[in-house]
Image 1 (cartoon, helix red, strand yellow):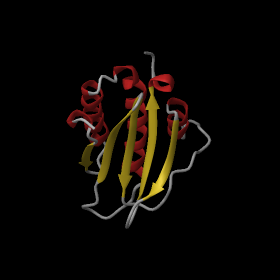
Image 2 (image 1 turned 135 degrees about the vertical axis):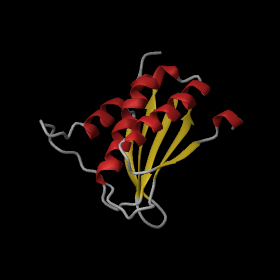
Image 3 (image 1 turned 120 degrees about the horizontal axis):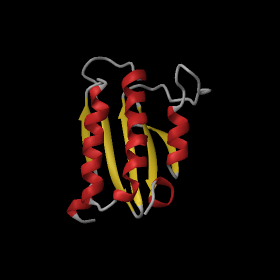
Image 4 (image 1 turned 90 degrees about the vertical axis):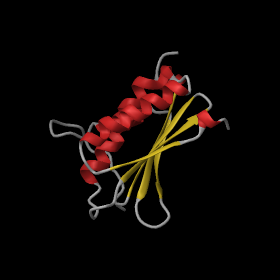
Length: 135
């Protein structure tokens, strides 16, 4: 793995502005990896995952949200870690929301939820050029 392909790991406070900051970091990583073809889809997926963590990860102060961006052969794996054990569940979309995980499912090749060592979970999605954008 080349230095430019090391995972990008950042921590964010549970604040609505964190989604925009996380998108900025992902945009930089994708550009450095020459993955502009997946940028639009990857940014939407990341926005949904970080927004879910900000809204729903009710954890004690000082617990941060962590993002990890890992280059894949034809795309990027996006991970959002938080200290809440509650797993995301798809809802019926409507006027009050519920569209997020449907978008993640539509824009990613695959996605899921993993337990973390200790507390919390990692919600991840893989966005590739085949599914995540036009080459």
